Length: 463
Image (tube, rainbow, N blue to C red; front, side, top):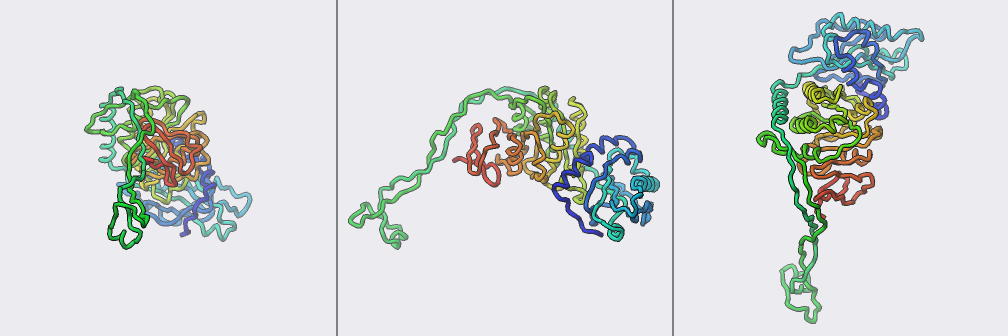
């Protein structure tokens, strides 16, 4: 087996744009898959397809320039408790003769796969991809490379987990009502460190100081005054009184409504792409997003909606920067379409590894709807951005709403994304903007909070 050849970052991005962004493949082949449709998939050019053995990955090899399997494929069974999530057709670009017809060989390979495993062509949820390997420069090298199909399988999301998440979302939606509260004026205080005399004098000899000896006068020895550090607070600024819209939900199922309140107090103008992470334990936050969209039409009518789960629960072998997949686009901005798209995304994956494909989801959304003015990224504060290398391709400002942000700090990845795109970070009470010009060590004021710009991101401070 060949070793995994890591994709180069710039190549990863080109691949990302050339492969229908995974979502395109899913939406294009929404019904039973025909070979004619599979033949329209644009090949993804890579050095070499990974072939390292991994759980939940099946290899169906063929010889170079052949459509016949080299193993008994009919003996391979998909476990009953698992489902196929993706299939790759892999071949080599090298040609023995210039007149060789690669598309004809690919068609024959699809036909042979359909003959021995027809059930694969009856599923609407499988991602099909075609990979053209460049590494083999001559016949000898090409014959050493893998050719044929790679099938990725996984265990479906637990029915119990999915049912519980859906029930939680529905209960939150049904329990919602909004309200307006008065926030009184608030003084923001700054801690101050100062020194004051204690009334005592210290001996000149360190040995006496170590013993704690002190004197009541300076005497002829010109003893040093003892000083102590005193901390107190002085007024720094006032935050004006205001009215604030909030959401009220059933407190037994949703005690914290920070994410909903942040959306309620943001003025959305222009066309927005709303990109939402639905991995892991994001259900309570997804419910707040849905509640806002259901009962507040302004953003819903001006928005386009994408949900991502970082690869449909795929094994790490299939995940690559810019092409992890698991991105679902709502066909319309009606609430029913948004709701069903979110649920489908949840059903097909829960993320797996912690870092998420946030940038891939943003780029997919911008490609699908180029008229978008801004992106609203609703992300898990606990999950780093794994594809930050693609940031330079994001051409629209990104406003970020971090969910589950327990300590209040803004992780470096999300600060960088907002800063470099000219975007902002949405807070419950205010918006952190003007990040473009922020420098290390700067103190950013927002509402009654102060953030210090550090190499770890934005850290709450009382300076």
